[in-house]
Length: 170
Figure (spheres, rainbow, N blue to C red):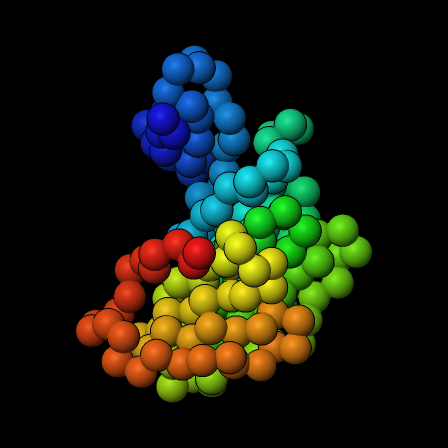
């Protein structure tokens, strides 16, 4: 089980640790204003995003910030790794999705439906490597081809109210 807690003596630090282990897995400076987090499937990284419009990649081995990515114009609302941890997708309040290649350190041009549909949740398919699902405030869920950055299908009114999470794509 993973625990997330703030140390009262060091109120600017958020601790992530595995409940069975007494040591801290990762300390995140709360001044970075992170609001979403995702763990990689097979590698040593954690990705987070937040109010500062920045996606941060944290190294669990060194327990330090590995890289910061500043490609968004607005608050980051969702971050996720693809199935083999080679890409990170991030979504924001501006409705933009940005893809990052973890190996080459390159990022895509922002794409999405625009500010009328803030991104609330992103998830890569476990079966189709470049199928990316995005849930937005408008009630729609869009399946994107992450290679071409084109929408494959949009489910209008798939949910009501802002979407807190989405089911796994199979």
